[in-house]
Image 1 (cartoon, helix red, strand yellow):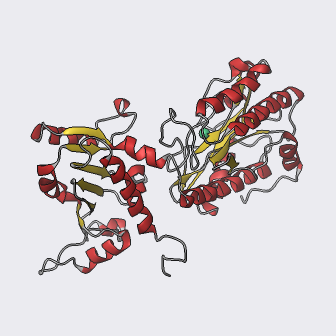
Image 2 (cartoon, protein in one colour):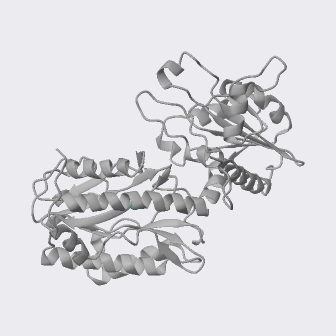
Image 3 (tube, helix red, strand yellow):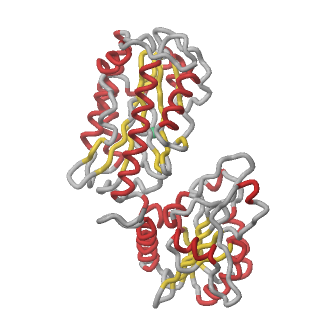
Length: 429
Ligand SMILES: [Mn+2]
C-alpha cells in the first residue's frame, strides 16, 4: 500500500520537514550557518531492549542502533547524511534482517540494499556507521560550530558516546565552538504536530483500556503485581509494544510513595491503590493515574480527600490554555488543596510535558502554546493514614484552550465505585 494517502504526508516528508525546521533554528544562532550537527541513535546493551534516542528518532524515523544523522550547513545550503549499520550477514543470524547502509556497486552507484534503505528512510545520501569520521573531514574544514546532543542529566550518568566524540573533536579541532543540539530539538519537540497528537491519542486509548481491565479485576487479596500484569497485558493486546515508564501500583502505605515500582504488596479491603501507568505505542507515551478503593467503595475520609484532589485536577485543567505558564497550572491545583487544609501533603509538580518520552523535553520558562501536551496530576499523600490519592490526565493545548485527551477515562468517585461494583472479571488462569 502506498504511504501517500490523500492529504496525509508520507512519513519521510514528515521527518524531512522536522530536519528543515531544525536547520532554520540553527541558522538563527551565531555560527549556525557554518556548522556540523550530529545525532546518534545509541548502541544496544546486552539483554536490554533497544530504544533509539528520542531526538534521533524524531528527526529520522529510524529505529536502528548504531545509526547517526549528520547535518552540515554552509551559508549557501545544507546537506544531510544518514548513517546506518554496515551489512553484517553473520550478525543477522542473531538479529534477523535489519535496516543497513548496504554498499556501492563497482560503478560507485548504491547497491540494491542501499537503494532500498534510501527509499525507506527518504534520505538522498546514506553511509555506513563506521564511516562517520571519514564523512566529517570535509564538513569540518569549513565549520565554525559543532552541535551535539547531550543528555540533560549528563552530570549523573556515565560518559556517553556523544561526550567521547566531543573529546576527540576538541583535541583535534580546538577552535570549534560547541553548541547544545538537544535544546534546539527540545524547542521543536515541545509543540506536537497533528500526527503526534494522533499517536498520543492511540497510546492514551490503550492505557484507558488497561485501566478498565484493572478496575474490572481489582479485588482484595490480589497482589499489586497481578494488577500490573493485567495492565501490561492489556497494553500488548492494544498494540502498545512498550511501557512509557515502569508501572506504579501502590496500595495502602505505598499509595504515598510517588515512584514505587516494587508492586509486591497484597492489597486489602480498605486500601486505596494508586495506579500510575502508561502505554508507549509507536514511540509515543501515555501517562494516566487513577486511584481506586480496593474494596470497591471509598471510606468517608478517603472520599473527602479524593474529592479535594479531583477539584484540584479540575481547577488545574481549567487553567490550561495558550499564554499560561505551567507554574500557573500548578498554582491552581495547589490553591484548592491548600484551601482544604491539605497543602503539606502535596509535594510534587502538577505537570510535565508528554510525548516521545513520559517526561518529555521542552522549556518550562516559556508559556504554553497550541501543540504542547502536558499531564495534570495533583495528589495528596498522608503517610500517617496510609492514604495516597493521585489523579492524572493528559491534556493538549489547543488554539483556544485545551483538550483533555484522556477525558473518557472515568475519574469521578461515584463512577469508579460503579465500575468496581460490577461482577469481578475472572483472570484467565
Ligand atoms: Mn506523570
